[in-house]
Amino acid sequence: MHKGSCLCAKVHYSIEGELSDFGYCHCNSCRKASGSAHGANSGIARANFKLSDEEDLVREFESSPGKFRAFCSRCGSPLYAYLTKSRDLIRIRLGSLDSHFNKTTKAHTFVSDKACWESIADSVPQFAEWAPREVLIQTGSKQP
Ligand SMILES: [Zn+2]
Ligand SMILES: [Zn+2]
Image 1 (cartoon, rainbow, N blue to C red):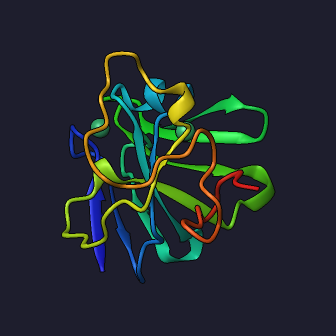
Image 2 (spheres, rainbow, N blue to C red; image 1 turned 45 degrees about the vertical axis):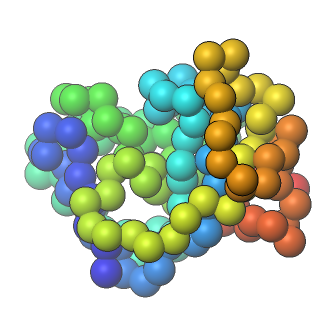
């Protein structure tokens, strides 16, 4: 149903089933990990995710205890992340998608942490930290 790849196109993946809803996370780690103003990540069961990495380029970085971020070691593109406590779920970096995805963001999260140079100019609800689950369920994240 979905396909994605890294910037150098040596790593590909495919996904069966629909990706979860997503928000724009403005926290410090999402900014560092994405190199941009916010992260945009959608959850999926690992069983529905198929990685094609013939040259064994994917590496994982433990950015905080129990949280691993996977990326292509050739081009540096972030691909997905997961928590060791919920290893069966992964969070896809939506920027790596090549296929059409028709959901739009439900929330701006961790706005209290956003970059001073970023202005949020849309009408999507903003939250200082996590969005409440009535607004957005962030599958596979640390959302309480
Ligand atoms: Zn790559
Ligand atoms: Zn974040």
